[in-house]
Length: 192
Image 1 (cartoon, helix red, strand yellow):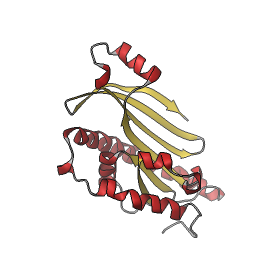
Image 2 (spheres, helix red, strand yellow):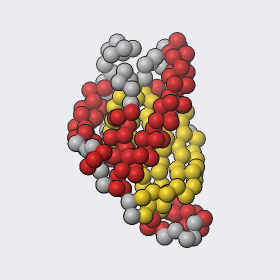
Image 3 (cartoon, helix red, strand yellow):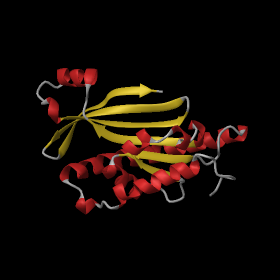
């Protein structure tokens, strides 16, 4: 692989986790997705495409400049984390020349520290859905009184380029009968 002279200790472990997780999304197809999964596939695919088109080239250029110091690899790994419909969308859209690991969100959360690449070695992008909880749920309910709480869902999208640079944005959606309607873009934003 271009830009990698030797395999770091975490590489085979992360590769094994990624390969073990592959059936979670490789056995899916757009035709077999439920209506709700199709909506998630569409939303994550659109979000990832925009990120890969607008943000990733800038990051790759900056990484190339930083690689002169020797602290950053010229060709970082790309770790994509999502729920299965999102992974299906990302796998379809990812450029074949990139060094990519695809992992379901749950597998990334359970990944032992020894299998995680140092922040400088990888660019991590995630995109998944979850039910709002705690203060976020209360804020969402106050802003959208007409929407039943059980129909609210957060789309969490984020990226981390190194140990000090990243961002996460939460978009609030209404989920009704398998259809998603955007209630508020940038419901909450966190710069890391």
